[in-house]
Image 1 (cartoon, rainbow, N blue to C red):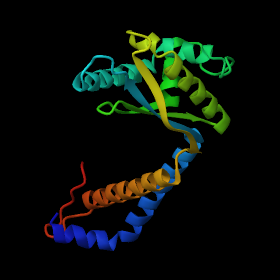
Image 2: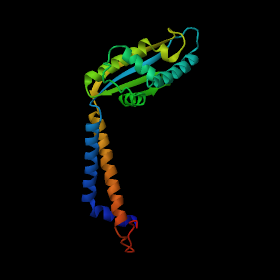
Image 3: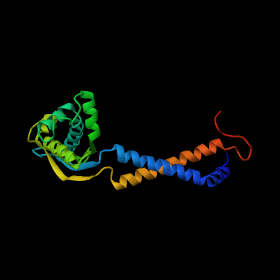
Image 4: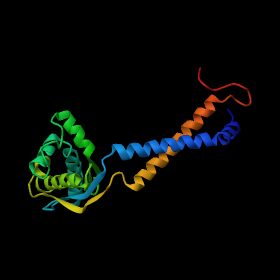
Length: 213
């Protein structure tokens, strides 16, 4: 199908294309609001390597390495146990007892954005209530700040984990995220509908259809 024929077909079927885009956008909106945890708490941390006798470049590379190690350690079973041991989260129903499901649930609850070059970690905890998200974040922060040596090795006083900002609670997903996802859903739906219509329609120049047989 020629481009001119395709554009003419899109103009002719614009109502159907628009409605399908709206349908997909509404579906995305519903799924995100119904399936996602309702609240998210965010805290930004900085991994500080204490100077001692090391030069700047060595400290920089060390902070980069430690940021990677700690960000991966957060998803370990040992870290989860340390979070529970703080006593800040309830043990009943907090996480599944099965190890695989336990780790899977924890990964869906906690996400980390890394800026390893600067030694920064942005941790987000998602939960159905603001109180639950806040408690988990408090326990997680306690482990990172006071027990980080257990997950990195080395001198206990060689590294400090400092809170840069937070904890900051917000609705999940945020209105901006919902708007972005809905718009993406609309354009994706409109594109799929337009492509489907073009495949089903006969070629106006040859009278043949591009629909698969």
